[in-house]
Amino acid sequence: MRNSRLMLAASGLATVALLGSSAAAYAASPKVTNGPNYTTHVAGYELASGDVQFNQVRATAHITAGDTTDPVLALQSTVNGGITYAIRLHLVGGSFVLQAASDFVNNAQTGTFDPASIPSGAWFDVAGGPSIADNLGGSAYLEVRESTGGHVINIVAGPSETDTATLTFHWSFTGKLPLYAPAVEGWNPDAAALGLNEPEINFTRVGVTTPAGVNPDGIKAGQRITFDFFNVDETLATLFGGGPGVANPLTLVTGPALPQTSSDFGLVGGAL
Image (cartoon, rainbow, N blue to C red; front, side, top):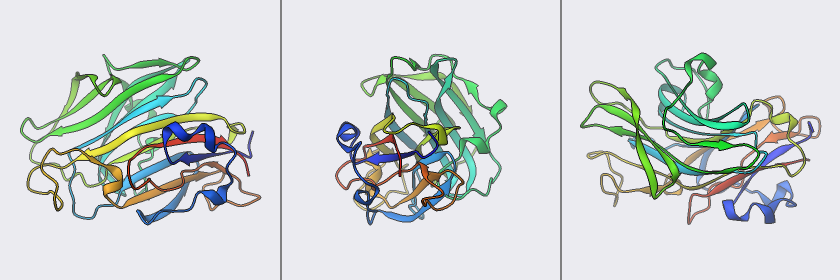
């Protein structure tokens, strides 16, 4: 159905109760400092922290049976791209499989990371990662983590946050990476086809950590922080990548902004 949208629930657990809510119920929070930025197939949040550096981004993704939206996590150098390390659960042949990609070219994007900015052939399956059947749904913990001591970017994944493994694959680097813009989002290559009230993914326990020497006030190195501690950029997807309207219905949209007490959010189909 082309007149469709995705709406962000205040909590992944509250998605069902919000299916019938109107767009007016999704007012922006003061935590959103930039946005909405409009695309055609990406909806989510990216930290707009200024000079705070991050070495980890994490979330548990809950995929609804029949979902067609990829959960995506990325560590980036800036909100406009640059050095990027990204992972996603990508729908392939009826199953969501873990894939990874990196990009060292400024892609001049605005707002959250766009997986389409990396050529499809540059994404690859990661051995040992979770696989979720689309017709059944399920959950997976996902994490991208920089080890400044080991000079590697690790991928951590598993069925839950308490049942994970550091996967064998990793990226190596030299020096210290300037990673200032973690992102957590949903990506759907055919968001305009989503049906009315079609449930998609939920994210819970979205958060980050900061390396030693660059910690914000009151935060220790390695301490886990929820996304809502920081200001965020918000990205919404509409049919043509512009502001929504009667002739340009929302197809993939996040709202309200992250709640102030947690960093849980969900995506669900809707219609104007």
